[in-house]
View 1 (cartoon, helix red, strand yellow):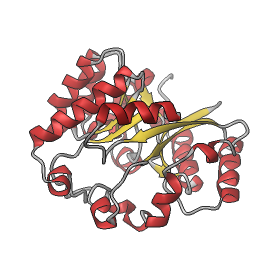
View 2 (view 1 turned 45 degrees about the vertical axis):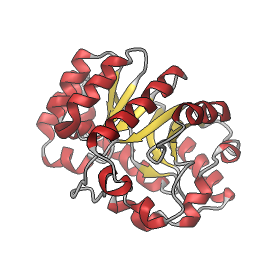
View 3 (view 1 turned 135 degrees about the vertical axis):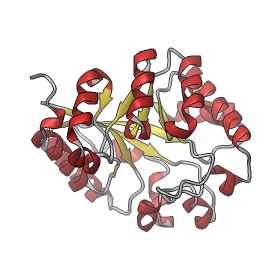
View 4 (view 1 turned 180 degrees about the horizontal axis):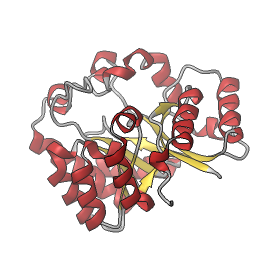
Length: 265
């Protein structure tokens, strides 16, 4: 069986040779392709950047790592057989949106990633848009909807991190407004109930199981029921860094070993 990881972050401090080895390793363990999430545009002040990054990733988000990842196209050529699809992470794009999306699409970005956190998230330790950019939730909605509109016009699928318990109505509106654009709402949208409704209503809505292994282990029955119901719309995602092939492998081993993902019996 071949696998595809829809959720890998690209910031790294690896040499080109190490990255090539990582790609070869992923091929060896059964991966046919990966989506890499690339932050090509980011603030010069690292502390501003960190406000829009989950706290768990702060140790890895150095200035060197950011510079290494902003132009992925030379690195993509290192892979022989592994399909690498670059997604533009647009969390810091606020102005000249139409022009920038067109420019990045022409450069070769195939999809778009959004971190939609209008307010502080104390659980994930994300400062949020209000604190980082000094803008209201309504302003964040407007900017995000413009980014989605122009990404959609460029034929770019969208991976949109959002807590559906708080922002489900806005996410549902975006998915409904752009029915020809595929949306991946990762981490089951932090609510199986809400994401289940979106999956039922919108054929262009998907989700991934990234960073949910510990929750699945603690409470397997409802997760298995959810996955069985929506198995054709749930993507594999590790939420790992490209420099962490061992984390990608451990996520894969969890799926292979766990009956929670064996839904065809």
